[in-house]
Length: 205
Image 1 (cartoon, rainbow, N blue to C red):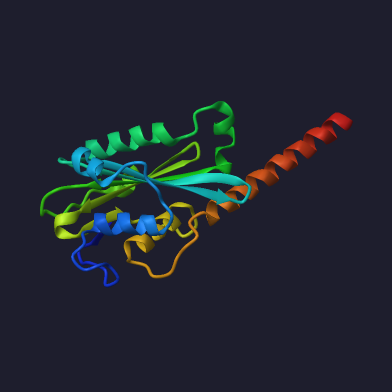
Image 2 (spheres, one colour):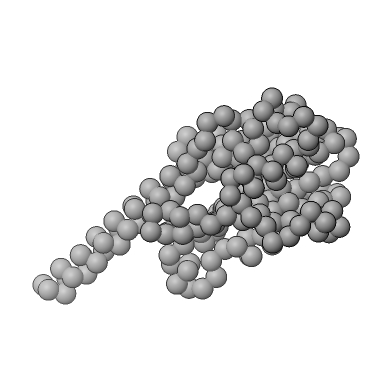
């Protein structure tokens, strides 16, 4: 089941499409890009990034906007794989410490036309080596925004979806999407400490 947004939120600027609204909101929230509007118009891709500080660990939140002339399930699968390969931890040490890292990548696939989309985006949510990939479909001409609809009560995906809803104007209250990551990090640290204690005890005895 997908969540469809076909009406402009009351907080949004008059006459702006979802892509313009979201890009403007990202700048307000401290995201930056090395590209300019002309590159988005000419090449159909622009990336906004923000470094995150999560306790003593660091992370990053990334929004990739890609114009997709023909959006299909195959395109979604390829997008998920290519984006994850770019942002996941690669070195062995980084993979081992990936639970202490949090890279969230929102891939906003901008589709043309005036036909609604209903792709099952929940199937393409992926977590791997510290990186979480979430696909978003935006159809500017009909003001439609589709994001994965997840039912999890405890987990790290739903807070990320709620954060996107906050940015797009569907949720008024801000949300700390990194709280589950922080909890998982402390659990992992506790496990490591217990293992070290067990090793020391075994060596002593």
